[in-house]
Image (tube, rainbow, N blue to C red; front, side, top):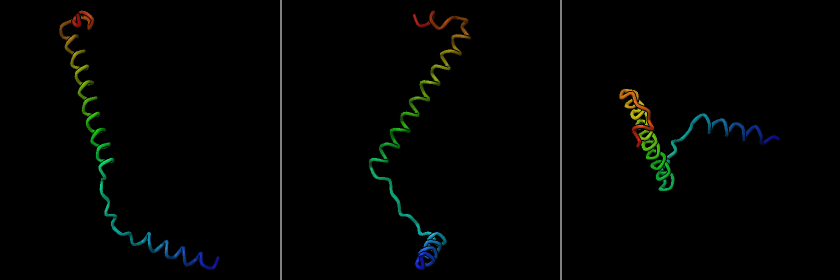
Amino acid sequence: MKNFGNVAFVFFLVLLFPSYALAYIDPINGSILLQMLLSGVAGAFFVFRHLLYRIWCKILGKNQSDIKK
């Protein structure tokens, strides 16, 4: 219990003066981030295309099933 004060003081000093973390993105994390980015872009493309399709159907005044045939 006597050493707890010393350990707490050292822990406090470590938190008080943080050092820089020289972090990097390894290939696994990089590929996961790239895959997430590409899937988000692809998903946004399909949502945008679907919305344009619905707007186009309303402009033409037709049902979506009439246009797809």
